[in-house]
Image (cartoon, rainbow, N blue to C red; front, side, top):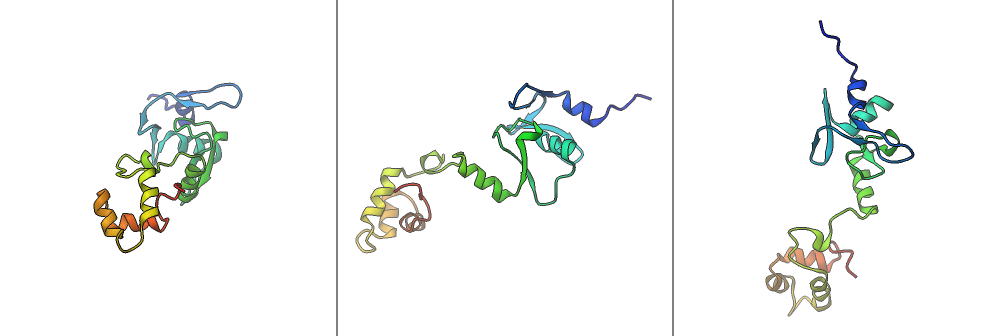
Amino acid sequence: MPRVRPVADRFWEKVKRVEGDGCWEWQASICMTYGQFDWRFEPKAHRMAWVLTYGPIPLGLDVLHQCDNRICVRPSHLFLGTQADNAADMVAKGRSCRGTAVNLAKLNEAIVRHIRSVYDGREYSYRSLGRKYGVSFRSIAAIVKGETWRHVA
C-alpha cells in the first residue's frame, strides 16, 4: 500500500520561499488570480497556509493579504478579517474601482462636476440631466447628493 505524504509537505513544496520579508509565492495551480490547493474545504492556497500555520479559520472571517499579492502564502503576510475589513483595506490602499476606472462608466469627472454645478431642480432636473447624459434620473440624484462620485470635488 502506498504511503500517503502529509498535507503540509505537499503544500509547502509548491511554494517559492525567499529570504527577507518578501512574498512566498504559490507555484502550482492558479484560479482567478488566487493560488489553488483544494484540500477538503480550503481551495485557496493562502487560506490553507493560514490553517497549516495558525489553525482553523474562525467562522465569519476571511484570510486577507497585507501585501496585496494574491498568490502570496507567507503566513506573516496574512491576517484575519471580515468582508468589511477587506473592503476597507482595498479602499485604503487605493485598489477600488471608482469613476472612469469602472468599465461600464458612462460619465467622467468633468461631466460630474458639470452636473453638480448646473443642477437646480427646475430647468436642470434629475430627469433632464439623465436624458442628456444617457443615465437614469436616480444616477443623477446620487451624483448631486454626493452618494456616488464622492472622490470628485
